[in-house]
Amino acid sequence: MRVFGVDCGTEFTGYGVVEVDEAARTPRLRYLCAGAVRLAKKDHTAVRLAQIYAELTALIELWRPETVAIEEVFFSANAKSALKLGQVRGVALLAAANCGVEIAEYAPLKIKNAVVGHGLAAKEQVQFMVARLLELERAPEPADAADALAIAICHIHHAQTAEAITAGTVRR
Amino acid sequence: MRVFGVDCGTEFTGYGVVEVDEAARTPRLRYLCAGAVRLAKKDHTAVRLAQIYAELTALIELWRPETVAIEEVFFSANAKSALKLGQVRGVALLAAANCGVEIAEYAPLKIKNAVVGHGLAAKEQVQFMVARLLELERAPEPADAADALAIAICHIHHAQTAEAITAGTVRR
Image (cartoon, rainbow over all chains, first blue to last red; front, side, top):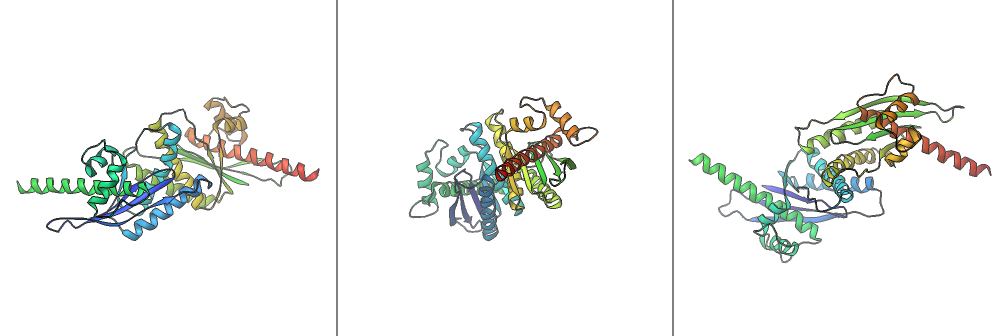
């Protein structure tokens, strides 16, 4: 299973690709790549959105994941920043849909829980655990790239649990 | 000059195309088309966004406007609906950018002012005036289509004023 995580932001949009060999006796997470699309603030919104769309589309086509995992909306901000974030998120969802890839959404709490073990973990704890789970010397930068990897790991975690449950049901 | 107006919404996204022959002695607005992309609530967000993107792209390529005019963000709603609206708006801006068309943004107040004559006009007044300015028997439906035409008219109005000012400066 290969998962493409996306962490949407109005300045940086992080991405990270994680793979797991489900057939292996002890499935291990494998880090494939991570990075972030940085948007020049001086550009017009539409130019920035076109850049995110083009880069995400190229990356999804390159890595051919089974799933694009994306954070569910988080409402800490005001309406103005929610709208700006929504514009980026809309374009990211569109890139996944137009590549014909399955989309999975996870709430921030679920993501932290899957990576750190509890939903109230600090940003640094998430980054530390992402590096540890993927056997990296340090967490990828910027933090948005590490966050995107965390979202991908969360999906693998949930997919595996779902599979184990299905396998259990079948065996009954 | 041909302008493609877009009125973004989470259920209906209206569009309308208006043309004006600037070379004519008495330039008249000409209605070309109007309608709305209706989104099925049951579909996943990404599917709906892909539908808006595909339909707007096809319409922009069909009508080949010089400009896509779009409403600036309006903050009456809460963060949740702002994010949803942002997703639609992001995809609409992307469609225009990927078609290589100029984008113009207008605040709701400016749009009402251009069509009705004052910024606090009611929705029905805007619809009535759109029909009158475009010499239609009645305003197109749904209301989102009429709103999109109003945005297009607003851009023509502002572009003409800008042109008149430039012409005046040159003549001095």
